[in-house]
Length: 368
Image 1: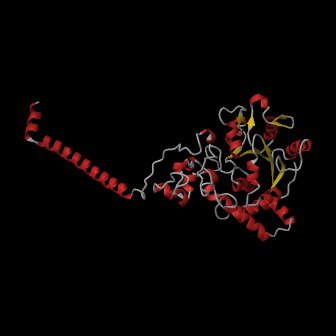
Image 2 (image 1 turned 180 degrees about the vertical axis):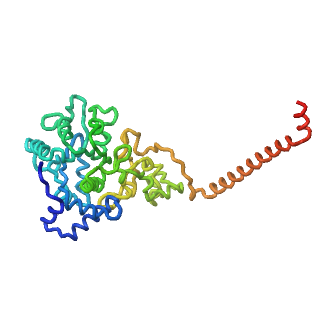
Image 3 (image 1 turned 90 degrees about the horizontal axis):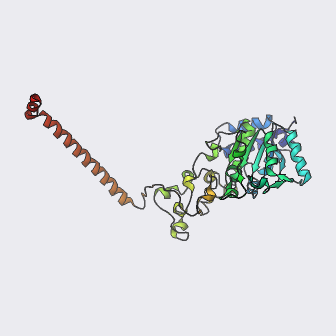
């Protein structure tokens, strides 16, 4: 079993000071949303535990998750690849190709057997005996199976690996299949998104290094720390939704002033992801902030749920700003109706009681 250096050893050999190392740990803890003392836990783990071996392979994909990962800012992708993990295989960015790449994959599996994380980007086509994705002269499924067999756990990067994504869109002629349907008994984690958020990907690797386990997952196998809250509930335009203030067309005043995009097809109310809190490009923006509704790319079957611009959900809202008088009158009317109904019911109840107490009622009862 190969001996790997710790992250702290690698950084120290590169001339990184203890002060900068602790700053790195603090930034990482904040990015993961961990509580007080998490930076010290990360520092302890990175100082004592060996780097995490990761083998990253690509099936049917556009490599957008790789592109996304390379743009992570906290921590930098270079810090992760060169210091935090031992990335011995990555289809897109590695120098080797052809037979050399195949040999590197097999050597890494043998070297880190039972220690490594297998990261899958893209999915697996099963139709046509796997001919729609050939890797090293063989169906990609065989390469994936070889890697999964000896992996400590597997990570499904992006919606392609997690749910199938556009490759699995109806009628799915290639038989594109997500990871969990192929290896349901292997410890795994889904990190959906098209692509997945850079800091979410890097933070998950950091968490696994620090705690030597997968993070807490929701019922669909996604990390709760990033997929536990709806986009709708984190969105800065939520107040406009509650007030009934919506963009009605892409060129109206509401669009220019930043009103809610729900009527334009925004899927934020049914999508769970960290886009509003983490954002993209080092926290610069996310789709809704850029003026486009959420398309729900981290959810199952988003590609088959009609147009991105169709409103497919029905969610009641108060509209308290736009119809304040109407809401006020309705509320008063509701209270008045309630009082009237309660009063009528009380009168009927008293009338019945009075009737039972009359002498005639008592006489009739005694005669019977």
